[in-house]
Length: 290
Image 1 (cartoon, rainbow, N blue to C red):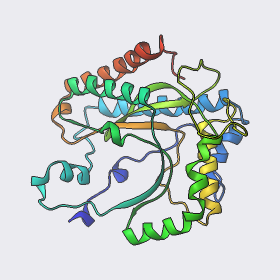
Image 2: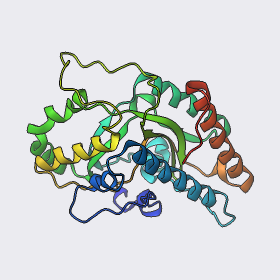
Image 3: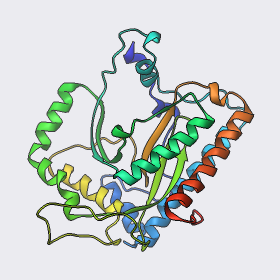
Image 4: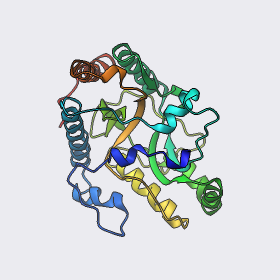
């Protein structure tokens, strides 16, 4: 039955709302860097434009009287509610370069989750030990054999990929809750001169040749990951490439908490309030987005 389930990607297209156009055949991350003239301030502005426009777009959908239901992941629903289809297994496999959030970011994410759970008790929350930021998706919904072939192709490059951020350090700042009809996340912007509030990363044995400072943005890191995979012979098949740096907080498994216009309005208000609360408690007064 799993083969006939419909992916949430079909109903919930994630489009680039920054205004940057990618040229066919090129490293797609170069387009934004070039459009921003390799300037961290412009890069941050475009990341901000994307997430603000996306939230505005999704708010309109949530509050529309024509909304009939949320977009629920049928695979996750069956895994979390086994009685729907006893013995169900998710046979999809993916290959992705992940970034692991530091402890203080996990603490912030967990606090936001608890606040949102109080408003919508039936939401599904991502366990903190699974939280990640997707730096580059190489392949999605593949068989184990296909993933094994990708791993064999990448094997010579894996040591340099795994240690790349030791030498190339990009900062992310300004957390905000982003959401749509299928999920909600805490999103960040590439840094541009903001005060350093996190402890420096520790890379054993590495003291020289470290590229850091806000001129090297998170988008540069994503560009470099793409190049490393391409140089290793990979055909990169990402579902979407947008200027977003986010950690998924949770998903919807039922419409119970969002069945009425009043419930949906309360949900939006909670998200907007918690975005401000998370900033204020961790970093002081938040800046205006955009």
